[in-house]
Image 1 (cartoon, one colour):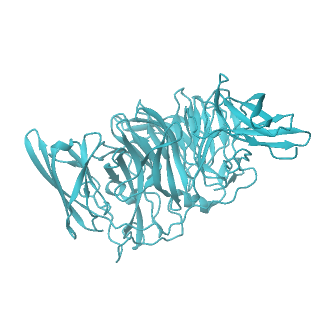
Image 2: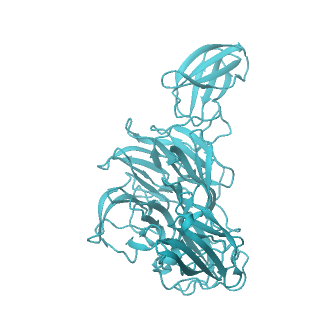
Length: 619
């Protein structure tokens, strides 16, 4: 995804084909159509969209929702709203496969269960569920039905290419020669402007892909490369089990524009504490991973299904539709507490993305935010709209933007191809407004909107644009910082910028223009890596020794003490220097054979020490 400058000075994508691929359904590749199913593609487009998971008379919200047409054959049946002891019985029967025995998994929050069938349903069968619950008025029974979809295989979908690194695009590290993080260029920096560290997930470029933390000066603090063929997204600092943790998504990034992987929770030694996986036969997508205080996680998942799309503006009869799902996962048990499917609630004709012979991503879910009220706020790029969903039932409450907005959009409050909708405590909504692919307005921006549910109006409160007039075709994020400043990640154009409330730039940096970062977040992070510091030493001409020291992931590192000598068991304190970037170069004017470095904290105490290494070169 290389970028260049247009004649007006703005940053634009140099390859239109790459833009289309990133945005969703622009790939010309046709993957295998079926996953264990044969015959013509079935009808999958519903005609009604007023679905709700509320099961009358039971006090339960269920998913799949009654009347759903988008349930995976591998779905569990989620019943949310009553403790396990009050759920007396659950049974399920398929119209083609008959009764499905199963077992109940109680949620660790104590407010429901999942019925997990012992075997999956088959595609395109009607499933009938019977539920009996204990209420204050005595036992109550209810019945509902849903239909399973026909999954489409993604086995043939290609991943984004990962070319060899260009000179200058990666950091060259002597002490960690196997590590190749992308270079970082800082173009504006007011001292102590950032109230935390910068969290990035560089990909789509020619450096190693992975996870990256920068300090408030834009210097690399931590870089974790991922295995070949894997990408990362949505690196964040969150809370889990009462402690601050580092979280991210990692997995395969498929060219249709979505991910298949898992979400990771790591502690302050970068150790894995938990892995969160999507349920119901789906894979976690890169677009959202939000931990909630009750021990649950909100995640996104894309569900490719076979579908006759000819009713949708002449789409292909043998088509593949990407249903977009929101799942609430009980982190402790892995059970799905709730699943919301775009296909049950949002008509495909609401999209601005025309049908294609390839997987049709009509919705493109890219953020999920839990509001203070318990409702959910989601963003759909390809319908240009933000939606509020009722907590639990998933019923659609209102739509902001798009073809059927519940609000009158005031001047300047428009959006197109947007990302990262978040509701602030005062009810305002922040959005990264891409505005391009294809272009609607001539540059991307971060915006804050006032949404008045009484007057049904949406008006602009704040707007932030990059001094170089960036037009970012995909991705992006907007974050209101605790100090009142704003951090904007420009997505496909790999800038990250801190704005003061009045709009002037306090900090600005970027990765190589071949790279991208799905989001850019700021948060304070403190961690001590489990591995010792790394060091290398080289004897130079003139009897000097060049020493290179680094400690990948240490947030407390302030300086280095060099210990050196002619005998391994007889090292002397040669010098102490401050930390300088990810890797610090230290020159000493003696050709010492053995070298060790000690990592120092802010008060000069020793945090850790490296192994003793032998200097290379001529003595």
